[in-house]
Image (tube, rainbow over all chains, first blue to last red; front, side, top):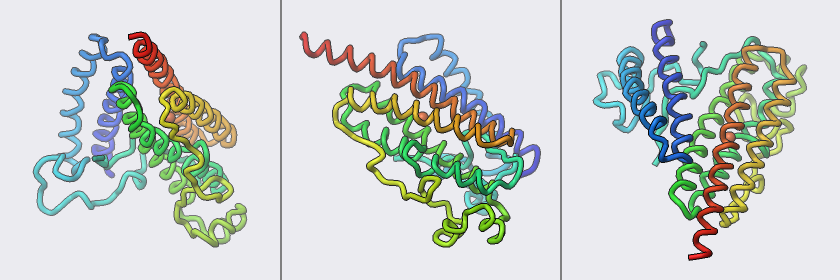
Length: 86
Length: 190
Ligand SMILES: [Fe+2]
């Protein structure tokens, strides 16, 4: 993967990590309004980062969850996650 | 339903080819306290949980464990990339190679296949949550052993991330246990 692609990937990973943490925290603290509002702010940024990555590199999720597919079908393009050199 | 995300949860980097380390790390792929055990344990236990919170925590942590399982496979893949049969033999991995070539088989560091007897689904939420908390501590201890076995700082970075996740999971399971105990006490008295 090229440098711009990698940079976008790191942004997606960083935002998603924060959201995973907040998600697990909210599972056991569902009434924490501050955590919920941070979750919502980050989730908007996350959607933006995913869009930018998918535009440049290809879909992150299959079965239609990454929106309309471009031609040719990009899901099967390499590298797969374990092959990426950071 | 599950969705696959075509990316790792956290970047896995490896400083150098290290077959012995790949063998040691394999235990987190298919050993007793590994990520496969964790995922299957939580995703099996969730069906007998009495509250939405407990079902949610087990679903979300179980799903995250699958992402860790992928990170572990990536470590093994990268640590063994380009290894020749001669190098494999010299690293004492000939017996593994004879059976599985360079396939990543869910087994522990000694090649013992993964079995579901590593986990339990008691149907009793309190017993299950106690098992989950213990499992997180066992996984944390295993990661500390693995970190001690290597001086590759790139590899250590990924192992430290996974170790840290076990600490967070332990915390969330502890809160879930408190919540379940409260829920069950409430049920008893009303
Ligand atoms: Fe865990």
